Image (cartoon, rainbow, N blue to C red; front, side, top):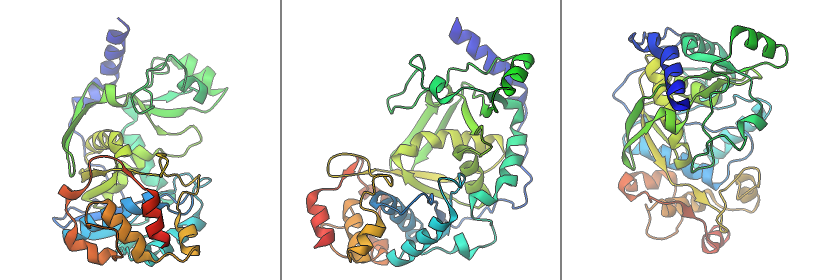
Length: 351
């Protein structure tokens, strides 16, 4: 009965909206639709890149360049407390040192700017306003969101229980006096499908894959899902290459693009790099970050050559520039499982 009630609530909230065909969003910069492949580098400047970040950036760059396309650089600094501007300059310097170039974006600017998400709030606000019939305020604390009764998924994330979806106007007013709310969007029982560049056909039912999700945080910062969905479309990106840990985000972002009347790029999800002990690489732990590698005198070709080998593009670890890897790139070669860095790989780096 609870499931039926939840389903009816969503249908009531969404019904009028979904009977209408999405109207194209009118924004300062219109989406650029072109047959040319446009890839993107989209780092978060929360610290120096580690090898996992470089692995993703390299494959995104190779995929676009191998298709004869261009690459733009977007700095995903939505949370300026965690991602201060000073790190953005280091990111650009590291990309240049590695030989991973870009055609527009970052401090270089370009026709689809600004390229810093912290400067695109007006665009995200317009998107939020277009979606407002599907949104509701959410007052749940972090502790409540992680409560034991919340249904968890296999990757450790949880589906929102919908506890704030049915609040009355009086209840909302009372809660607003206690704390500012986040903005959450109600999802319908809709299946989203796409063809992954590496893994082929993918599909997920939104109510099972993500549930109602936040598109603006309680502190006013716009959420990753909304900002990235809008930016990829409006900047004319036609190809997004990122880690397999973001596969679930693709369903949410394609759905948002559909609601906003925006085009969706193609997506390719690559395996994650793990440390020798099996942990996921993390900026927080300083795992093999470029600052440390550069201080130890590691050559950039040694890094990109090793990563090319781990991506299945080279038969053995050897020095190779990004440009030398372009003719070798093939999605069929990319491993299907997570890729573990070993002590042997580390000895090659520092050898």
